[in-house]
Image 1 (cartoon, helix red, strand yellow):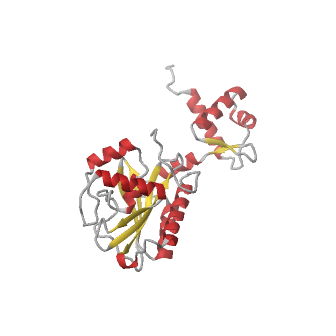
Image 2 (spheres, rainbow, N blue to C red):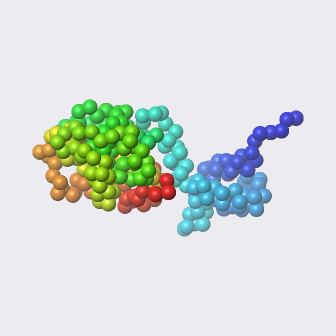
Image 3 (cartoon, helix red, strand yellow):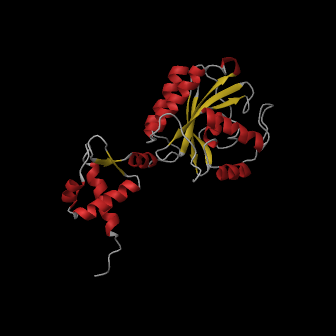
Length: 265
């Protein structure tokens, strides 16, 4: 009989995930050992590995072990290209229902800012030439700024080489130095603005969406004509941020107040 290519520890780890998934209230390692028919000491090591890798966590109130948000994140990724999780789409529609402005969702994917979803508002102005799948000129629009403000410096530099700044309107930032300065401001205040940089007569407000490990996942933004835009309207800004935080929470991001770029990425 030929030697099996199965890695026993990996197989056992996956077995434990399957068993834990069937126990919504959590399990103890001792119970898990019996249920999986795995020696207790081995089961402890496997559970510790799953915790270290982020797939299992310990409930502080019950001291039971449960699946972590990382499992939910993997589930959310198991979708066709060009789609977003249903709850994020619903939260985007909530923005439209409340603000009546067209709302956009973009994702940071393969080192590109890609528009994934557009919800049309009933009084809105839709930004011309923006469509699902669009990935250019991210330095100029609020969706792109909200994402690029939270990527590592070396990744941003590479992105700048692949997408050199262009001037679309008199308000467009024309140098990489000016753009990076604007991104620092965006990062520090927690939201992005496009004040007629992409298209004259159109302004946008955006906010970042983070995933379970603290890295940037994407962004949400609204567009409106200049005559409806008020830079001092913090209530609208805070609402866009609130929806972005709810989207982040759905992706397992543990901090609902914002995010910080991981310099080690």
